[in-house]
Image (cartoon, rainbow, N blue to C red; front, side, top):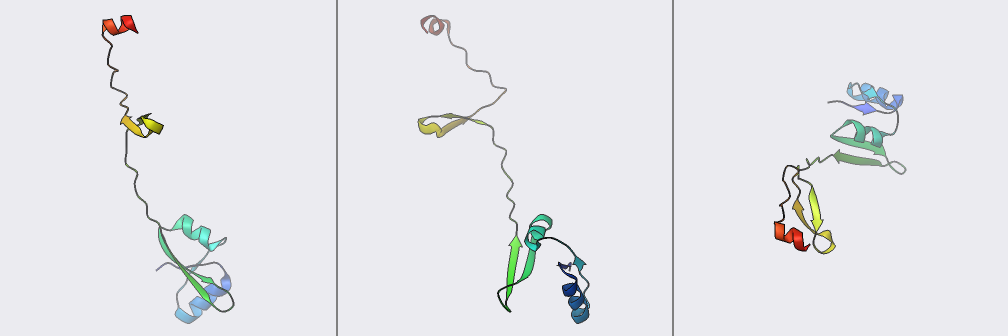
Length: 99
């Protein structure tokens, strides 16, 4: 179990009462937890003599690799995939004459 504390007094009390040593970090505990861990539990002092327990679990959902889409239809809500290796259909000669 890895424990991180943000002041020397807490580290000393933890070692004396439980025999567990903890690493000391600096900065904001919430920022530290968000930057360094996928899941963790924070014990923060609350108003007066209370304690705030905050559990953090990052849910990372991989993004699907979708081809780019060309917006068409009303408000651009219809979209067909655009494939770069696909050639555009050629117009017949009589459509070129009358367009």
